[in-house]
Amino acid sequence: MNETRIARALAVGILLTLAALPLSAQAPLRVGDVYEADITTPRNYPPGKSAGESAWVHQLTHPGATYIALHFRNFHLGQGDYLVVSDLFGTQSYVMEGRGKLSSGTFWAQHVKGDTVLLELVTTRKGGGSGFTIDKYAAGFADIAEPPTRAVCNNSDFENAVCRSPSIEYTRGRAVARLLIQGTSLCTGWLASANNHLITNEHCISSSSAALNTDYEFGAEAPTCGASNCQLCWDGQIYSGSAFIQDNPGLDYALVQLSGDPAATYGYLEIDDRTASVGEEVYLVSHPGGRAKEFAYTSDKGPLGPTGAGTVISTSEPTCTGGTLEVGYWNDTQGGSSGSPVLAVSTQKVIALHHCRGSLSNCGNPNRGVPIDQICAEICDYLRPECADAADCDDSDICTADSCSNGTCSNDAIVGCCGNGDCETGEDCDSCAADCISGGTGPGFCGDGACNDLTEDCLSCPEDCNGRQNGKPANRFCCGDGGGENPVDCTDSRCSSGGVTCGEPVPYCCGDLTCEGAENGTNCEIDCAFCGNGTCDPGETSFDCPQDCPTCSTAGQSCRNDSDCCSLNCSNGPPASRVCQ
Image (cartoon, rainbow, N blue to C red; front, side, top):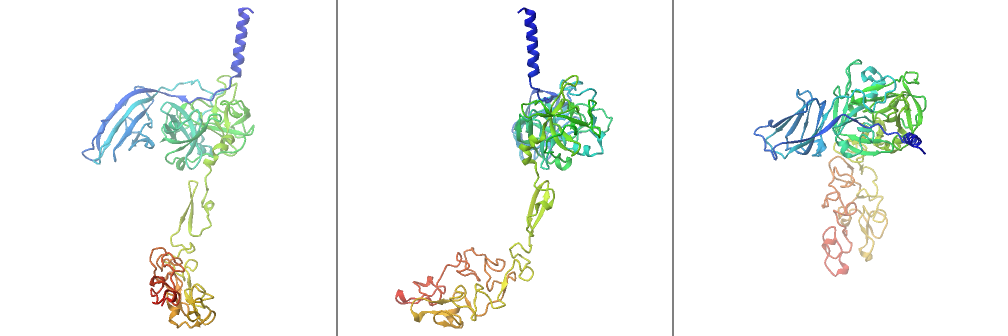
């Protein structure tokens, strides 16, 4: 084989190899470089002489930078002290205290747009702190007119977000954020729950450190439809730092949960847990090129749907990350669009997660996103709210106030509610019979604390009626007018010992603040001392409160000594003949 044929064969082999390579995910747009620094406050700085004293000031300038993000190490301020970070004119500023971002001590701080950052340490008289070190910083470089990750087919179809206002699309787009990751890279993300869960690509955020050291900027929009747009233009509200929950490189998603409550202001996007359909209309909301928010609603590549939106052209595009087959569309994307939601016009819900660009030229391959139903199978349990309104929180308890806040149910007890099973202050047997017991006004019942001399005796109701039915026949007796051996009338002294009343039941009403009748510390704590307080209080007996009232023998029962008797009086004589008096 001559050299020409060899060269041709090698060229063909190389081309075949390149054609077989899988497409790669659209990488985060790098917009800054990191520089070493050595900026340190006085170590163990002393407390100020007066509250609000400026103890240390520093200015950092990086000529030409579009933004500056500082990296703090060993950040630890004293109680009440704080650090103000601002731009040169004070139009951008934020404050840090204690251990800094999420109390981590070492972190990338929120970026400040422009080429200068001012730092001012303000102290109080409570005590100094350790201070901090800035060991590096990131500085943004100038916007690149045509980024290598551009995936715009034909002419650009991007439009400033405000061009879509007012509309349901614009409202949905408010939940989309611009992400500056670890001071140097840009992506897009979107709120996916009322509890501030945010979804982006795994190739943007893949660790707890990256989640912590990301700025999540909402509301970064150009003021008018025709306003010029540029990288990191038009400030929004920055939420700095989040908790990393989970990711999946194959499906190229990351789920984090932001600190603060941006969902209360910007809302969140719902997931359309289904398979996309070829031909259905879709649009993207993102921060392409790191610019202020833009829509990619239509496409000059086509085909378009009835509303003029781009459409799904395929649901079986080759994967970019080794996962499932993907959703294809011609809506424009660009570096910085990674993590954008692809929304279905028909439902205004997310149908795919954008993560992969098409061909860089000639519109050869469509842009593509991971099918959201594949992602939902792994994360939607985190996102589903407990409730949409108070009706979803009904616990069938009339004595709880049911409410729904940010998708979470609360069932708070209503103090003094009739029906909760407790006789509480302000309630009695008349106003709340459901909670407050009463009795003793009729024939009574066994267990009401009174031995009714017409219907009860020591055999039919031993808990109310005194008696003794063992031992020598001469010593046996039974209170009441019938039953048992040697029935005696309730007037017999033996029938009213040990706290038991023989006769008509005593009327009682729980809640009248008098412990009487069948009330005790268990069934009417508001009137009677609580059973279990260690004291045998009025209304308690060894039957209904044995822990406070030890079991004792009543009059006529055998005993060994005085402590065996409820009356504390055991008769003298041979042990076998001793009885309680």
